[in-house]
Amino acid sequence: PGSEKERLLAVLEDLLRRYAETGLEIPSNNEVIETLLAASKFGPLARRRLILALVDQLLEKTASTHLQAEAVYQRSVVLRLRGDITGSNKLLQEFLNRADIPTRLQSHSILGLLHLSQATNHAYNFDFLSANKEAKMWMPTESDGTEKQLDVIWSQIHSAGRILKGQGHFQTAPEIENLRSRAPRSKGYRRLLLSLSEIEIRRSQFTAAEHLLMEVSGIYEKLIDPDIIDRLGHVRALIAFARISPLSEAETRWNNALSFGRRYNPLEEEVFTVAFIHLFICVVRLQHGDSEGAEAAFDYAVGICRTKPPQFLIPGAGTFLFDDVQCQIELLAGWKLPRHEL
Image 1 (cartoon, rainbow, N blue to C red):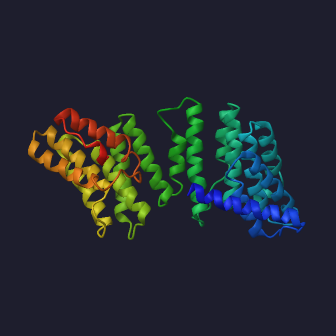
Image 2 (tube, rainbow, N blue to C red):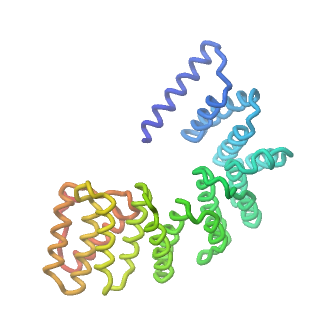
Image 3 (spheres, rainbow, N blue to C red):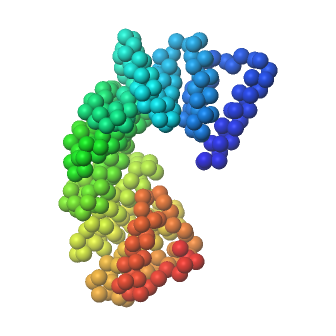
């Protein structure tokens, strides 16, 4: 994807160069401006600044407030990345202070991004009180659950977390609890529950993690036709639930994760996640003293790993969790996955 993005940007740069060489005027319609704004999000800062300068020229011929707002947002980000926090802050404040902005952009997600950019500037200046206030300046409309709005809500959640961390609140985050209540049926909310549960697991707060995982699993089970993202999310939740289970329930929980994984992908051959789960089942059986059952689970995983390399669709499954379960097996039984099969 990265190389493809670079190729597309190279094509765009070539087109812009040809326009400059021939003296032709670049069309100032919304589609062109949107394309340039999308391109301004990537690449070296110098190139992004040049694209945004061109956008500013084209915006003089359009009355689109949301495109003007998008350009201001991108420029504020570039200024901040260059270290010019004061310039970014001034640019945002001047735009947000315009009398027409609150009404024209009230229900538009770009207004949320503008406030979040300003909140980030305040955080850089260690003014966390202003940052916290600014991050809450925009609220999504109940009638519009667009993906863009949900993305902004998710950005608000991350922003709140950064602000709270800056204030030294590492253990409690009531603002995040407030944000998560805004869109309880959204993908963003489900992602939030998964992320919060992982945080609790890493803090060894397993009871809190279990409550979060049971909540999100209940949501997933009620979905009529979950897409691939929700299927992965559900399996991820079940895997996390198994990781923190007492030994007496561990194999049942791991088998439940295995069952849902196969239910969601009935036409697929055995995949890496199946091997990953069998390695954990191997550990559980070793801890129960069932060496024969453990060896069977281990051999099953080895058979899959011969043809299926680690996958990274579920965070940790192909990295630290995979490494951890191999270490446990080696310590308990001395068995190793052959290096060429990893």
